[in-house]
Image (cartoon, rainbow, N blue to C red; front, side, top):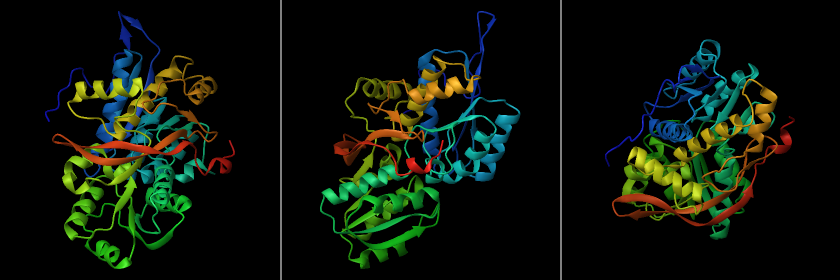
Length: 380
């Protein structure tokens, strides 16, 4: 589908002067993945975020966007430049948990706010929490906990589990096992960025598992799903939405049909904000929004709602305004737990085909008003 832009996506800045009169400016630094493996995730976060900024009509918000290339050292350098040279007030955008772990503690220690539109490692939700760190997406374990709960409801007796060997992958398996009541038939950590899963699929085939739970985001998920479908292994798959994102589904195609996955968002959630978001995103970009786009959109609207109540330079007042979460989320009901991670409902979705497009439909709510397991470890 041809990409059509009906308003300018301003990469380096929005206007900070109206009718010749200077406006107090809020600077937001977005560091996200825009090239290489996983670029589609960063593009969607960026596009959702900028859609909300443009819709707000606020000329006092300046957004500076940089590509981290999914490399922690580059992300750190970009964050240092944004804090020291660009003098940003807020940072956001990181997709990957290993990059978040490299950037967030330093940024918040320097008195800047960090709002995560995706990565939610357990280390930043528990003992490593900080008053200037907010996660607007989830705590990493959440969608995996929902997958475990769904497996229980489906009567699964044992599961084979696999995920990449990095913080989010470890959180995935911990989260699944926290709620899953059956046995683990096998457990594997794969290399981050891996594309050949022949050895892992052979182990799954021989495991005797009734179900496979996997977390492989971006290109990793595309490779695994295609190879799994071609292998002839007929053990059902479940996983979090990251491996069944709108962009990934178009690359995987029919191999993903029927697979159940878990998410706190879907395009068919029945609330006015979500319906308007889905339509406006399609109008602006010529494609369906993804989970990541919805998170970027919600993150920007949270910032805007806080700026309507307080100046970001008044850290205490702005922090309180963020905690209030006084915005209309695409997810419906949304609030923050005391460790500043979402309390939200999580759904089971199933991959379907609508015309030529592969997408998801909501099957049922799996966890209602769900928080996270690390609240008591956070001593803010």
